[in-house]
Image (cartoon, rainbow, N blue to C red):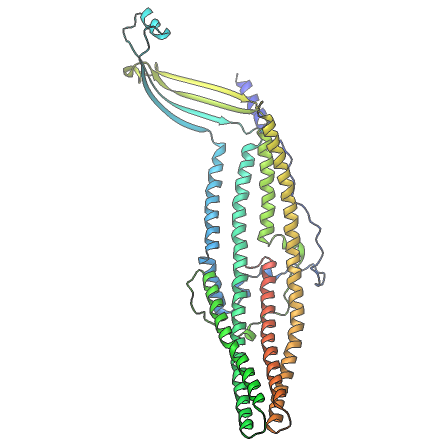
Length: 470
């Protein structure tokens, strides 16, 4: 008997080591040797590997990001999802442990005198008119994981847990990028507000001169009206920028999980600088840094496990049960050991028949969903590489644009100063002065906008490279 039991155990071990379905490995997408517009290199160094506090060194910005990572509600939800997933991982480990149950019952039955049981009691002249039964037992049930169903359930639960951690990382990278971009927009608005106020003061000075000339009969009322219109156009920008600053501060505070309030700034827009060399590394290294790509890779693990689970459901299930305890027809004999002891051991093999079509359909659907997961993984890789390339070309071209815009501002500032001198000496008319002041205002506002766009592109590149979750 022992020989057969050992043989059966050996067969079960061999069968349980087999998989009834073949897993699809992580695809190897065709990646370029370097990102577009970047020099081909084998250097894997990337700004995405830099911790966010070492990349964003402005102290007020660091405080905002710190607060957002802790208090942002999306981040808090992600942490709760991780906690729930951890519990599921711990629970699924118990699938390999036999089910154990304690059962204690006591019942009495008064059969009909005309029933088979009642007649039997009368036949054997048993004085009792009712039957009592008292039982206490432990039951053990275990399903042999022959086809890998439980192993696949464990793999799926673990991959789902890892997915939640990747989701948290993805949320954090978006928070870091979003807060930094909002902060840079706030600094741009500060600069633009200062530019507008300076231009209002400049227009006030021009308007006073034109009014003096009007009083002297040197210009008409049209000149005064045009100067006033120019001054009001510049003045109109002041409340607009003040409004936008308040709205941006509120948005940043809410993103940081705080009530709307003023935000501290310790630097101006032009004081924020980054290393000239913003290395992106090589595209193949991007796959291990991007949380969304890692999440899609884990989704494939879950899809493989789901296929295995559905395939295993189509095969016979071997279940072994055992039950033992004490049983007696009389309460007084319940603990009469060993006479009241009993034990049962049974084994069963269940093969689904009528629902085989349903199980086959579920298995086919799981395979289709796995193929869709492979497509989504390839898409996530493509999107990741594209986002890095987009950010890099934005930074490159915005630097060129900023250089041109800075020269234009310098030229127009000189032109404005010259036009005022010529106007005061009667060598230029008021229209030339107004035009010069209008041009310099727009060019200075545009320069601040370009600088903000460049800083935002740097933040976007950092996020696209998988930076921000460390």
